[in-house]
Amino acid sequence: MTNILSGRDTAQHVIKTNLAPRVAALKAKGVTPKLVVVLIGDHAASASYVRQKEKYAVKCAMESEVRRFDESVTEAEVLGELEAINADDTIHGVIVQLPVPKHISVPKVLSTIAPHKDVDGFHAENIGKLVQGEPCLQCCTPKGIMTMLRESGTELSGANAVVVGRSNIVGKPIAALLLNANATVTTCHSRTRNLVMHTKMADVLVIAVGRPQMINADHVKEGAVVIDVGIHRMEDGKLCGDVDFESVKDIVKLITPVPGGVGPMTVVSLIENTIEAAEKSVT
Ligand code: GUN
Image 1 (spheres, rainbow, N blue to C red):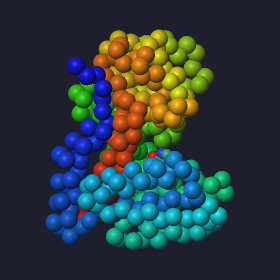
Image 2: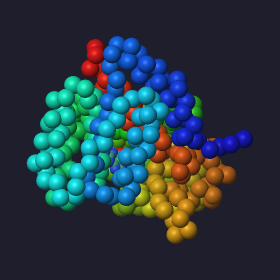
Image 3: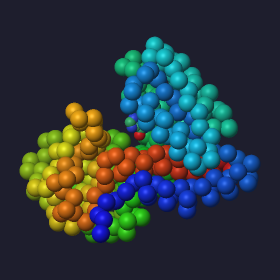
């Protein structure tokens, strides 16, 4: 019996059964969903993430375009580009790949993207709706985690869900989504006293800290479902997560691998958000 919760397999399943038919239905109405990715500078990890996004867009027969800017582009130029994209009816979704150079304000960039095209789900309007449990474009990593938990049949109502990490793009929104799904949610962070006491209670444990292999067998309860959001390159060139996979894998009920866990589900959620935005544009 495998206890690997594969994001790669779940992504394929979601594309086949949900996303591809929705793209076909839109095309029958004369609309091809289109995503624009704004990429500034030459951050190596960003370039790799953007390639993944393009690959998945192709798989779903959608249109995608990368608009590249030199590191020296001004903030005004970027905001002007976003205004033009907001006004272009052939584009349904836009993201600005983060990080951006220091002279460009992330809050300004995020608030300039029209909320109905904000397929990253980072605009304050979308985050606010997500917290309130209203329909909205949801941040992609949390959305992808919820899809994986649903597809795996993990019961959330009444479950103890523990999130480690409190970032705006993963920790806070996944805690809100788990709460909306009726889990009892605890958020832990760098100032949490006795982390193990909390993580040991978790039926569902989401780790989004950014520290290689910080969670091990001592932290997890037998039979827990563990979602590892981290991705790091080790000295030997291999990738690892925030969880020490080998130490934990025989204790837990399900665990996401790195790579092939949360990563593909983040990209699939971006594609799904773009389809959702395109669907809204024709209704
Ligand atoms: N950089 C790392 N992750 C993300 C993401 O989910 N969206 C954007 N726009 N940039 C990122």
